[in-house]
Image 1 (cartoon, one colour):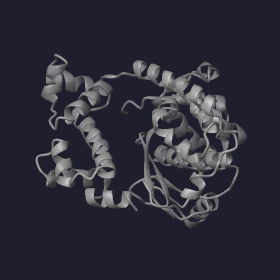
Image 2 (cartoon, rainbow, N blue to C red):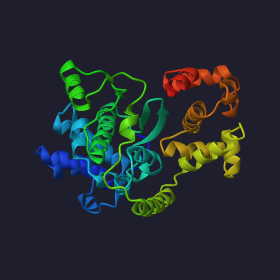
Image 3 (cartoon, helix red, strand yellow):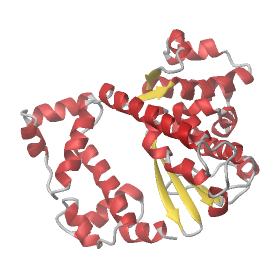
Image 4 (cartoon, helix red, strand yellow):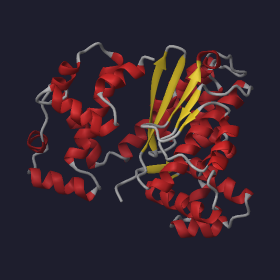
Length: 340
C-alpha cells in the first residue's frame, strides 16, 4: 500500500462515535486496526493514514451497513474538522466557508484533496479521495460529501438541499438508492467520473448565525501556523520531488535526470527512494500535470496546444490522450463543463 499520509484524531473519533452508537466494540475495532488506544486521548494528535484506512475497513466489516458513509456523517461536530471547523463557525456565509476548505483541509488529514469550481448558478465542490481500496474509498467519499451537507445545514440553520450530487461509485440496489435520495433530497448521479456536490447560489449567500471577523482572523493565524508545522513534519521525499517537478514545469521542461542532478544523486537512487514511499517519478509527474492542467483549463484562456507545451508534452495529441486517461474526459469537455 502506498503512503497514505496522516489522519487527525477528531476525524477518527467521528467514526468511533458511530460505532459506539451502534454498540460495536470500539476497543476491539481500534486494536484490530493496529491503533494504540492511548493515541486517541490527544485530540490534537494524528495517526498514520494506513491505520485510519484499516479502521474504516474493520468498521465496514463489523457494521455491515451499505450506508456507512452517510450514517457516520451524522456524527460530525465542529471539532471533527479540527480548528478549521471553528473557523467555519466564524464565517459570514457558506461561500466564505467553502473558500477555506482547500487551504486548511490538511489539518483534518491526507485522505483527499478538495477543489472548488464556481458555476453559473452555484459552486461545485469536488473531492478527490486518496485511498485506493474501493470499499473504503466508497464509504469515505460518502462520509465526506454527506458531512459537508450536514455541517452546512447546521451552520445555515436550514434544510435546503444541494442542487445535485455526483458519486463515482457504482449505482447500488434501488432500495439503497432510495435511502441516498431521502438523505440528499436532490438528483444523484452514480457511476460518475468524479465525486462532487453542487451547492446553489442562494444557499451559499445565506448569512450564518455567528460571524466574527476578529475570531476568524485569529483562528486563521492559528491554522496557518499548524499547517506550516505539519508541512515540516511531513516533508517526505515524494513531496520534495513533487515540489521540484512543479517548479521545473513552469519552464515547460522536467525530467528525472534534471531533478536527480539538482539533488546530487543518480536517477536510480531517486527512483529507489520514491519506490520506498510507494510512489514513482511518473506517478508524481502525472499528478502535478493533472493539477496544473485543470487549473489552466478552468482559470485561463490558454489554448489546449499552449497548455500541452506548458506542461512539457511534445504535442497537443499527447496531452489530449493523457488527460482523457487521467479523468475519463477530454480537455475541451472538461473546460466546457467547468463553466456550466
